[in-house]
Length: 294
Image (cartoon, rainbow, N blue to C red; front, side, top):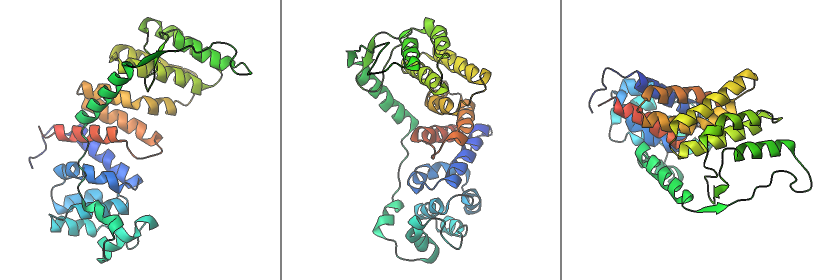
């Protein structure tokens, strides 16, 4: 493998975030995908062992299985294992790696490499899904006013603010709206009158998502900045909004080859996640590591 280039700060930060992800979450399934990128920067047994040492035991055990072609690295990783498993679900995997017990069929599949779905492939699939959804539109007649046997003021405000920027067309699948960007500020101002901040988040993420699917980066940033300003001014928690908009922040940062922004945005949102990094996040971080070799 070639050495990393001197300008590797974003790559180092990406590696740190991968390490944190596998130290916080048991995810031996995806660790197989990113191990080749970890090894780009940690090529000797000692440096690799130091890097994986903080990780969850199941992740380290799976890394051990993946290193069958490098017995010295295997031994170094094995030495980082604790005396006891930290998760009963992976007990048999731990027993195999730590004590040489027979590897059960339910764990043996972890020996198989799992190639990472690249960022380019994920983007190709996303673009295809959007095109298919936008090719199958249907007229909608969402009512503003009485609905069911009651009337909800917040529902009316949310619906009205969405309609201020939407044509009365929605896709039958995943992509509900197409926006009129010149009315974004007015719509978000109207949405600020709703009682619950979660409904404001609904409006902002709906508008932002539609703009992002249209590749309108300028107006997507307008929605993102106005919404962040709203949450700041109102002293409200915006964790849900920041988490929901992260995939599009990632999309535009990768599109612009702004690798520092890729890592910064992922590091910002990471503490807000309840689960491990998504496939899109892993693919983007690994792409940052890969590009640093060129």
